[in-house]
Length: 114
Length: 110
Image (cartoon, rainbow over all chains, first blue to last red; front, side, top):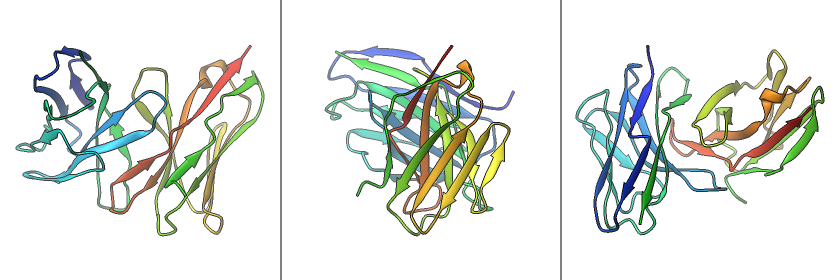
């Protein structure tokens, strides 16, 4: 089965702790993305990576970090520096060549920080 | 002007109705446009890409008006299962960088 997996589905953390969200894809896509969605808001881009060992900040990168050591994997760390970490986190992958820029999403991780 | 704007709705329609959503975008250089569907507490799923000539997929028709910088989605013969939030998406400043609208909520009633 091809697709994008995110784990865990729900995550609870205490304030001040770093937490890492997993994202894996077996679609052989070059590009991967992390978004955050808050209630009643659109998706906002946190980080993206168009190739292994390279990534760029999105619109709201502060308080987050990523790595892209393998094509299949793009984990996101929510650090204690992120002021409002409670949100729905969505990972996506897609191609950026050939004129097709569609992105496909994983099921998401709901992070609650108290 | 916001990068991508949509009427938030909700649009409450009876089964069988035809409903249309519009979306405006600010970047005149945008080349790629999409409609995604998002069910409550789920991830967005690609509904259809929007091509310059317009495109149709069953009961769904997408149109692009570059001169006025808006995209539309028409749903004919609405089904209960069409109830969801519809997200308008436009390519941002760099290729592959998608800008999402906040979505339009559709509720189809029996």
